[in-house]
Image (cartoon, rainbow, N blue to C red; front, side):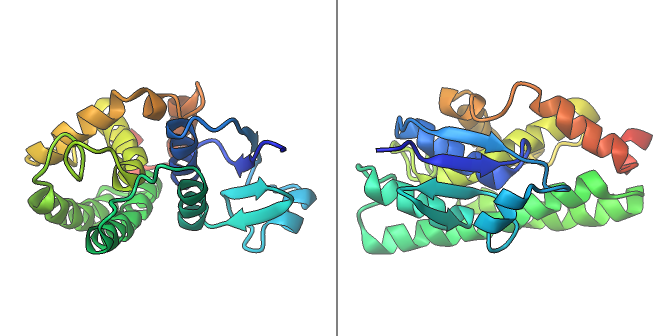
Amino acid sequence: MAKPRLISFKICPFVQRSVILLKEKDIDFDIAYIDLSEPPEWFLTLSPTGKVPVLEVEGKVLFESAIINEYLDEVNPPSLHPTDPIEKAQNRSWMEFTSPLYMAFFKIMMSKTKEEGAKVVLEANKQLETLERIKIQTPWFNGEKFSMVDISVAPLFMRLDFLKRHFSLDLLDGKPSLQTWSNKLLARKTISDSVVDNFEDILMMRIRDAGSFLIQQ
C-alpha cells in the first residue's frame, strides 16, 4: 500500500496538526511543500478549495484538516478521542473553539499598527481566558490521556511561544494553566519535530515582509 502523502506549505498550523497526528500514530508518510502564493497546477487539480492540507491516500484525496485528522484517527486505532460520546463531543467543541485563535495569530503578524494589533490581541485574550477557566485537568486536556484536543492546540502554543520569545508579547501571561499545558506540549517530541528546521526564520520573514507593527516596537 502506498504511503499517504500530505501536501503543505511550511508554516501552516492546520497542516502541522496532521503532521503531529501522523507522528503520534507512527504512520509512515510523505510530505510535499508548495508555495501557496503560486500553487502548481497539479495541486489546484487536487484541491477543490485551493487550500492546504490535502491528503492523498489510497488513490483518493481528502481536504480540510479536521476531516483529515478524523479519518487518520479512525483508521489507525486506538483513537485519540475519548470513548464516552458526550466527552468526545465536548472535546470536538473545544477544538472548534480554538480554531479562530490561529486567524488571530495571523492577524497579529500582519497588523501594520500597534492599535490594529492591540485590538486583535484583546480579542484573542478573551478566548484564551475562557480556555484558561475550563482547563482544570493536567497534564493534558483530558487528564492523563493525550488527545486530539492537545494536538489541535499545540501549533497555536508554538506560535504564541514564538511571539513571547522574539517580541515580548506574552498572551499566556496570567494564564498559568495554559502556560503549563503549553510547556508540556512543546516539550513533546512529536510536536517539536512537526515543523521544518527553518520554521521560525520563515515566520520572521513573513512578519518583516508584512511591515508588521511587531518589528516596529
